[in-house]
Image (cartoon, rainbow, N blue to C red; front, side, top):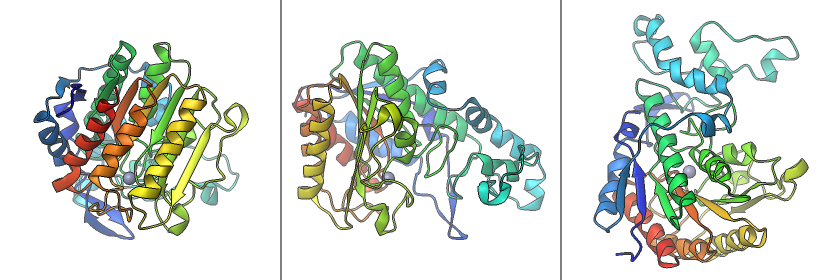
Length: 357
Ligand SMILES: [Zn+2]
């Protein structure tokens, strides 16, 4: 039991996204970013004296500060566009799956325009085939944003720590793209809200097993939001594969405001916590006055999505290290897919962090 009852902002709407299957290396595989993740976390937190807060609909401005309105409109309308098309008869399934990706390999300097057919248009925003849009996806992703906004508001109003139970996760969503089971970038929205409410410099520390390429890219050229991540080495063949390397440190006004600390497969508590401590010191020394923690717990040993070997005690200590910065903090849920241990890992982090307040 923590002494500090952490506000836990959640929404039943976040259960509405059902990924069912992902398309991975050409075959449908069972979705791991499942709706019952919400209940696994709630069940663990409600017995520990935290304060549950149900999110209410929030305005779009913070979301549109970090996302292209065209992405938002696509996600809002995609499931209905798919339902209106011939897909039920053609393929018998109701999830939007891109069929081509209009990258420079295809457009090759020609004046490309948006595709009329949604199975082609989806590739303008989706960058993988495992992040499908179905009925309820928009409602869940938008409600996760509401959770992030309200948690950031609570911190702006004086809470030392608030937790946003965001689902689906967000840190792989870029300014105009979605992928990696993420649609809208909840952590980036939280940072935008903290800035709106007077935070001068926000530090984002990403503990998820995978580098948050979405968050990193959104703030890559900005000096007012730092992004630091500890994750499994993409150079060893892990998502996001093409970015997340140590020599990516920001550009322009954001030069030096990005840190990537990739770790080898199999890394456990010792080196992982050393990296967390380095990032905690970095955001503190850089003069940040607010903190966002991208709380992915898929670095844990039991998690099926990563080869890192962090323990619950490791997550508790990570919370203590980041709480010890003394920065008012929003913890935003990212990955974590082992249902039996997921809630306990989140609880361990929050207890460690709250104990430092
Ligand atoms: Zn992850």
